[in-house]
Length: 97
Length: 207
Image (cartoon, each protein chain N blue to C red):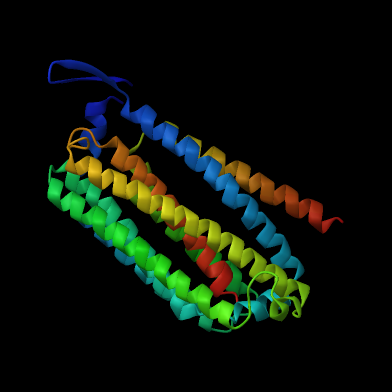
């Protein structure tokens, strides 16, 4: 995509960012509220799921991944895949010790 | 992919997509840096689940949540400053950048009070009070200080970078048709935000 397309695709509007910010604030309130409840071992899992969703919003909207070319998306997915592999390898090693 | 822009008769080569891609590559190294620490955290969390649970109670959840809100808001003002420059609203963009810096400083001031409160209770790396606790709790606070400390350094670097961008916007080096440096600074700032999004629940909300 050339420069023109990139600049064209950006909506240049304030609204979407304010909406995402409101969603992020609401999710923070939810994660704090959920942590106050007694749901045993699901506490960390729930917190991480909410955090991942917040990170997804920041990546796609604030960091413009949604309007970048596919190459950027593949880059990020590969980076996350390798981080994921590190976690899987570490825990498979750890649990068989 | 490359773009040639003619300014004041000069022929300047510019590659905004390449520039942003380079920034993303740098951000991946940051991901691995913090990722390694999250790996360490997760293994010890698994191994010393009860101690981590106990130790996390010492942290102030309200303070942590408040700081999360401050950082999220600073990410918003950063994103809005880019929209402002795209619309050629230079002064508004500079104002939003300065609000971002202000919120980042506010975050650090809160962090300072938080750390001071811990220090005054004798909880700091190597303190007698901390060393008398179980090894799981020592590890929790060790990770807490290293990870929030490294994140704090990133916030400081971010403040410096945004200040440089504000200056560039003022002198006209960042304009409505040439703002990739502001975008890259924004990418860095949002990454710092994402790291905090994970640090917050892992240290404050596991009680």
